[in-house]
Amino acid sequence: MKLRPSLLFLSILIHFRLSYPYSCFLLVWCPRKFCVEFQEIMEAHMNQGGIQHLVSAEREAQQVVNDARNAKMARLKQAKEEADRAIGEYRVQLEHEFQRKVEGTSGDSSSNVQRLEKETGARISHLKNESGRVSHDIVNMLLKHVTTVTN
Image 1 (spheres, rainbow, N blue to C red):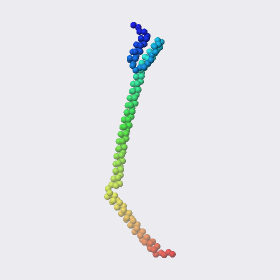
Image 2 (cartoon, one colour):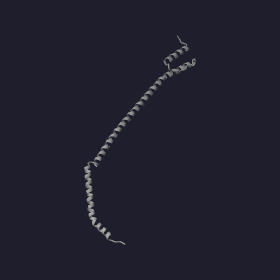
Image 3 (cartoon, rainbow, N blue to C red):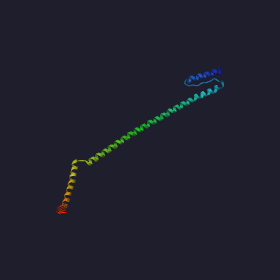
Image 4 (cartoon, helix red, strand yellow):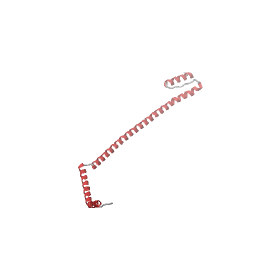
């Protein structure tokens, strides 16, 4: 049994519409244009596989971008942790150096007192020696000024 072109067109249209319910197209029946329009519809149908391929490629690309972003965030987090650890170690090192300097300068208070007493004793003995050496000259100068009368 041979179908007439109009029935063939309707059967193809129904089959295509049932197979792809979300597709939207408008066919105007014209015997000459039927083959051209049907071929364009079938090419569009075949290109849907290409569209699906592009959509899947886009999803894969998005996944690659997301993976790269997650890896970058992980590297940044690791770098921050390493920097915090290095800062902590440096802080501890500086604190030890400070404590060592404080102990070196202040140390035992009795040793500081003894050091200051030695320095003070040395200065006092130096001043006594100098005053003893120049005291005779100072007494003579004072007597000279007191005994001299000026008009």
